[in-house]
Amino acid sequence: MDDEIGVSATCSRGRASPTLPSATSARARLEIVPGATHLFEEPGTLAQAADLALAWFDRFLGK
Image (cartoon, rainbow, N blue to C red):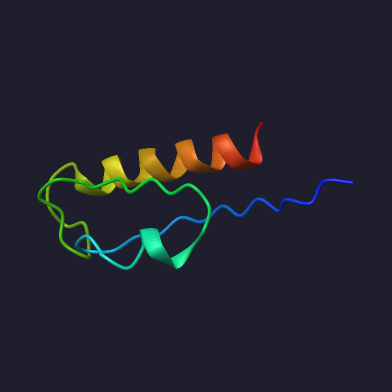
């Protein structure tokens, strides 16, 4: 029996959160969309955030 439990999460915020990496004991990766605000209204930022989310789902949920 495997004693480790894997946890995956995605977080979307308007700016970097210093508490995110310490909120979990698992490996964490923070992706920043340069120039994006919390609504991703700037040209290209919503598409970039969507691409990052899609990559996360592909990685952790597979096809």
